[in-house]
Length: 180
Image (cartoon, rainbow, N blue to C red; front, top):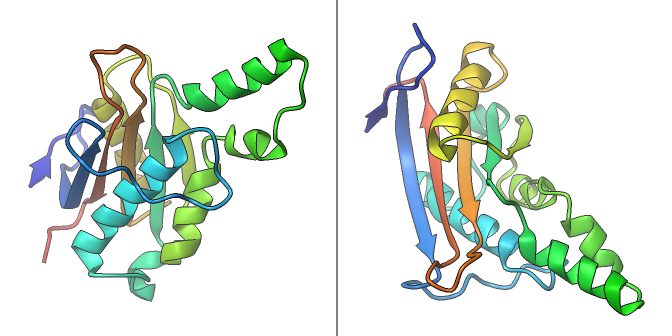
């Protein structure tokens, strides 16, 4: 599948693998050691693992691809559950778990994914004002065009903020190269 980005004059990106997860239809993601009080990080790790497994059938990514695979996490609202847990502790006058401070950094889980899959590229988290997929793809395009990456694992994730919504995530492994 080829996706054209909105950056004028850029080459279209090829989706090498894609995976999605939704709380309404899928099993909960596996627990992720070191992350508590929020499904945000486990969801990211799970959908990233699904996507990379679809492409490489298991860890690690082959060395000729791993060192030049960047990761971009895109979320408009971020980890609202961790924020709520920290705010709740402060409001109650209790100590917040030290783990909450570690996991409040959005790229922390990307480090876990990077270590699992032996990835060596850039790690970036963004919170776009516009269309998350379009802005994530534009950033992936820039990373590829400036030589910072050969492939980009793009992970889009949102936690539900209303009862009629569900936590959901999607991961795309993209490249400017044609899929073999």
